[in-house]
Length: 98
Image (tube, rainbow, N blue to C red; front, side, top):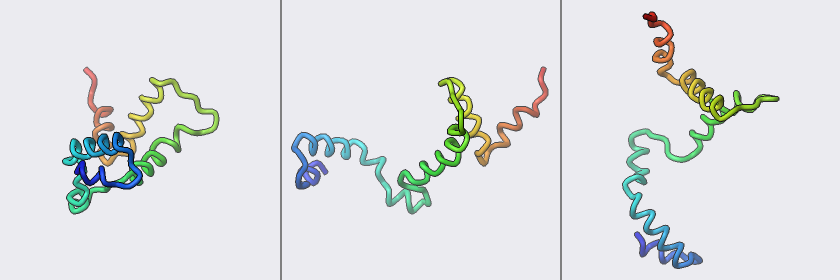
């Protein structure tokens, strides 16, 4: 792998060595053919779309200001509300308190 990267035209030797080492170290994570066969999405498009529909719609409204803590709590809440497992969240509210 490192030799193939080193042979790329226009790539400086130190950069090629670093890239080759990274690819060799992370080879097991880059099994995109296997991921696609399992029906998993590869790439940033689905993540970016989820970010846009899940967070930006709510967080970028006119006049919105967020503290770090408030933003973190809202991200968790929006994620739970949009999750197919939202029943896990609503079940918490249905439990009787002691």
